[in-house]
Structure formats: structure tokens, C-alpha cells
Image (tube, rainbow, N blue to C red; front, side, top):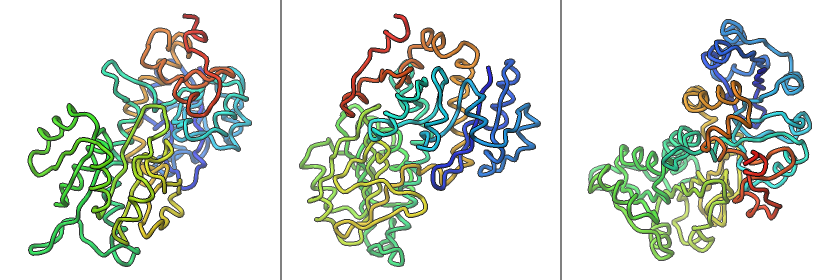
Length: 372
């Protein structure tokens, strides 16, 4: 199979779908790989490194899309790329369609087969292709939150860990999943006062065992969210419902009640965000102030550390890329029900129920397109 890797064109996105070692693995399996010139520059991998791994270098993204049978990306295709997709072509990347109806309609119109990293599962119901980037985003959320709490950034002028005789900052993490756990780890490492709110008692128990009595755990209720968000210096929204839009747990009234110069980092923004005041931003213009609170809502947070993020992502995606290339998308999904969970769009049909529901579009059961 001919596998194509275009350069990412989303604002300040430097990650790349395949690193040279992944290209070499595909070539070892008998496949051909076409990489757009400069695609790996942002992670320190030049065209020569890809050639040495066995790839062919394409002059443009249009050439990659025109020739490749399987397109491997990182971020969702941008509007300029939709027109290059064609019927039967396989796209394997993050999509986050529940918060992006125009993209969903563009993919449906193209006739391609779009498989989303973020809805592929494993035998324990986890999201193995979302986890590496959630780890990065969770850790970054504390880093950027601490930065924007500084007075010269417009923040309240608070040091997360405080100093002897002065209270540490209060950090509230909404959601104890992969992103939330990594945010907790970083915040506790900086000696902040950390609270986590989650609706799963089992998860709260696990977090209590993992972090001990220095972590404050609380079951998720409207009252608990309001009480802790309104008194926090930094809130991290790390809520996830796989494939679906994030619930709006934080109201405008809660944001308005926070201290002026506090910070809200919405890691859930790819799925629409978990606050009524959240709206997508980019690394070029990452923050805005709403109701006196600084909002950081960058939709591709891991893009700020592209080398770490790309290698972490490739570790998780490569087995699936090999399966798609070795077997073709249909057989690969028939033999692996966890990969099949990644199917979102198949040749004009929307086959992921949560996305169809959130976008108000017709749903086609995946078994129908898989021949089951």
C-alpha cells in the first residue's frame, strides 16, 4: 500500500503523522511511503532522514493526497485539504467531529473512509491513541496555567506552590482521566493545593491510592463544582465523553464568581469545551479574558512540544497503521473490533453514533458498512 504523510497546516502545528522509524517499519512490511517535503522539520527530522528510512519525498501536499491510498496525519484535515480527499481513500488522524459539523460534512462529501484516533479503544475500554496526547496536554495545562497566573501575563500574580508563610495556589482539576491525572501529578509536584472532581467513585479511590492524602478528592455534583471552581486560582477542564461533545460543567456564573486574574485551562476544547465561556484558540493567540478570568483554550496543546508529542503518538499509532496498510481498512476493522471503534465516516455515511447525535446528522450502524 502507498501511505502518505502530508505536512500539517493547522496554525502552529509542528507534529507529523509518521517519524522516520515508523516509515522504516512500513517499508520493512513491503509498503511504500510518500512524505511531503518539510513535513518533519518541526520535530527535527529532515527530508534526508525520511529518505534514509525508505520514503519518497513529495513536492506538495496535493501530490501526497492524489497518490496515497492511506493518509496518516495528526490533526483534522483543514478545509483546504477536504477537496483533495477522494472516495475510498483512508484517512487516519484525530478528527474530533462532535464539535466540528463543517468538517464532518466535508468528509462525508469526499467519500473517504475517516478513522479517528480519539475513538479507537482497547480491550479495557480505554483510548490508547488519545492517551499519549492527553498525557502531554494534562502536564502542559499546569505549565501554561502557572505561566498565565503571573502578573505580567495578566494573571493574579500567584505562585502555584506559594512559599513558607503564604498559601499555595488552589488548583481544581475537573475529571480524573488520563489528562486529569497528569495535571494532578504536575500540580502536586509544584506543591499546589490540588482538588480533583470526578463522577466515578472507583476512579477517585484509585487517585487517592496513587497520590495519597495530599490530593483532595471529591465526587462530582453541581454543588461541588460550583464550590471549588469559584474559589480556585487555576481550573483545569479535563472532561471526556469518548467521541461526544464535552458537557458544560462550568457555567458563566461560576467563572464570573472567580477571583479576577484566575486562569481556566480547557483541555476538553477539542470536544467543544467544558465551560460555557470556552471557545477555541490557537498557539498564535492562545488566551482571552472572559468575566475577568484568563481562558487558555488551545485546540492542539501538544503541538507546542511537537517532538515529544510526535514520538509518543507514533508509539501508539504504528501498530494500527501497519494493520491498515497490511490488511486494508475493512479487513483490519473486521478483525479488530477496537480499531473498528475508530470508524467515524465511511464513504458518505456517518457511522459513529455519538457524533451523529451531537451533530444532528443521520447515523449508519458500522456493521452495515463492515458487512456484519
